[in-house]
Length: 134
Image: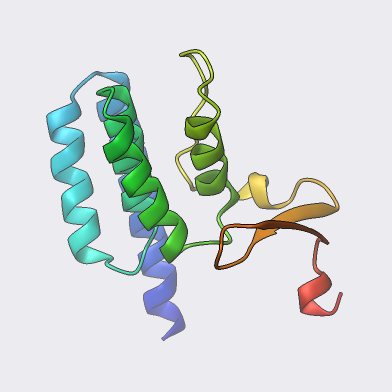
């Protein structure tokens, strides 16, 4: 029910906070263990895969990072942070790019237009809220 969803969101936010701390402290093996637990507890959530993608990118495993970012996107296509991570990885930008953890609520609020991707990965610019009839 609704209570479960709220608990799940809280758990995922706490997971993100823990992973951020591990990454900042360069404790990547602990981060990966925590992420694996998150994947097991929340198999339908994109955020654990997004976090693993970030860890893989830090480890210079670009292929592994992309696999997890794509899995995250497949599970949570409306999360703009995940899509930006894929775009960032594909852009071959210099190191120092900011990868997004996926729990940034404000990312979904910016701008009046968004890019929505279809099954083929083709982006379409649509007015924010147009699909909701707003």
